[in-house]
Amino acid sequence: MFSQSDFRPRCAKWLIATGLFLMLSACVDKPTTLERVKEDGVLRVVTRNSPATYFQDRNGETGFEYELVKRFAEDLGVELKIETSDNMDELFDEMQKPGGPVLAAAGLIDTENRRKQVRFSRPYLDVTPQVIYRNGQSRPTDANDLVGKRIMVLKGSSHAEQLAALKLKNPAIEYEESDAVEVVDLLRMVDEGQIDLTLVDSNELAMNQVYFPNVRVAFDLGEGRQQRWAVALGEDNSLLNEINSFLDKVQKNGTLQRLKDRYYGHVDVLGYVGAYTFAQHLQERLPKYEKYFQTSAKKEQVDWRLLAAIGYQESLWQPSVTSKTGVRGLMMLTQNTAQAMGVTNRLDAKQSIQGGAKYFAYVKDQLDDKIKEPDRTWFALASYNIGSGHLEDARKLADNEGLDPNKWLDVKKMLPRLSQKKWYSKTRYGYARGGEPVSFVANIRRYYDILTWVTQPQLEGSQIAESNLHVPGVNKVKPPEESPPL
Ligand code: BLG
Image 1: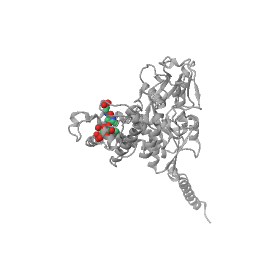
Image 2 (image 1 turned 120 degrees about the horizontal axis):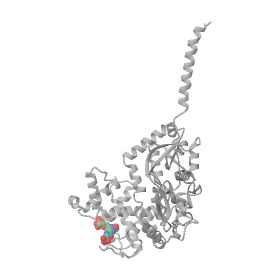
Image 3 (image 1 turned 90 degrees about the vertical axis):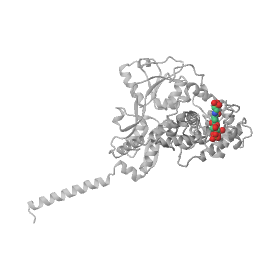
Image 4 (image 1 turned 120 degrees about the vertical axis):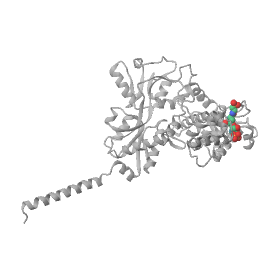
């Protein structure tokens, strides 16, 4: 028989052991968010469908947020599963749902209201909220000028929060929040005069300016802010820590800068007048040559929209242009190149496009295997314009400076040196107008982006005009009036 004194210590030990066991099993039963993601082999991410975040083009999924989050999933060694939500409220609702997406990558700004629903990562992109108005209307210059205007913003957006705060100070300000629109719709509505003003982030405007030549920045509303990813409020930090070290890593190794460069670094090359002109040429000129671009693209295994973008940069899609140096035709072939590519008449649009496509595919194929996409495409464009010899010189200069000769971002810094004696005197191929391929590539990338967006599958069908091109808002475009630059 046990005395009570015998029993107590044994019982206590048993209880402690059971407690420990239960605690341990609780740990075993409840993996961290990160462990769960890795176990499932899937990273579920919620985003928005817009040019600045995520959209489908003919090559598949694309967009700044998509590219960044794809790299994160690759780092984790898991598959990426993207979900899109129609509006901001829905996006935050999704984040609350147990078993819902674990991460929101949607160009989100950290606001007080949102902090009640999610937790934010470290920042990765600086943006400025901008009030947008229609050219020709009187330009608002500060918050007081918002009174009496028809203003619409995305429901649940940080911009709606900004307006709510302004309305507290000045109740005469009226605005509408809509969950039936995207940023592109808001810009189109301003462009077409359906609303007076909207509020969007600078990166969104920069990407969309070309489709809406009449929209202008009225003024910046408040300080610059930073975009961040978000995780659910109850997340145990395992995922958030991983996200923060990933963002830190891509910041340090240059990946983030390259993505910014790719998506936002070339957005303003057109300007207002250029945007208007491009939109017009898209409707009036491209349809005549679209088939040639498509046929040649298929033959050379290049994206036809890239060829079309080269053609626009070279001649604004005009088959009979001649440069001061005697370079001719829609794709601006030199006599030597034309001969090598079997082109007998450079002024024949079909031949010019065939020759240009063949030459582009050839120079791309000749590039160093170490140059990977998407840089490979930018290098090939530079080579098309300045020749492979000079491009090699610039790569060597990059190497000598400790830069990466296989990254466009680095080599484009070196190209302008080819026109300075101090530098070109030491190169193998000597002087070249090295600044030219830098703007050549930037312009083509911009045209390519636009063509990719206007020919994306979602826009096909009812919205497509005579050809398969559709430019939102372009049908109603009016010639640009003089206005202060952005
Ligand atoms: C390119 C050739 C390259 C050639 C370089 O010039 O033309 N590309 C084509 O013909 C498609 O083959 O490289 S090389 O063969 O290794 O020498 C360098 O000579 C054309 C460029 C030149 C440029 N546009 C296509 O991008 C042009 O027209 N420059 C003249 C400008 S100006 O108006 O006369 O000042």
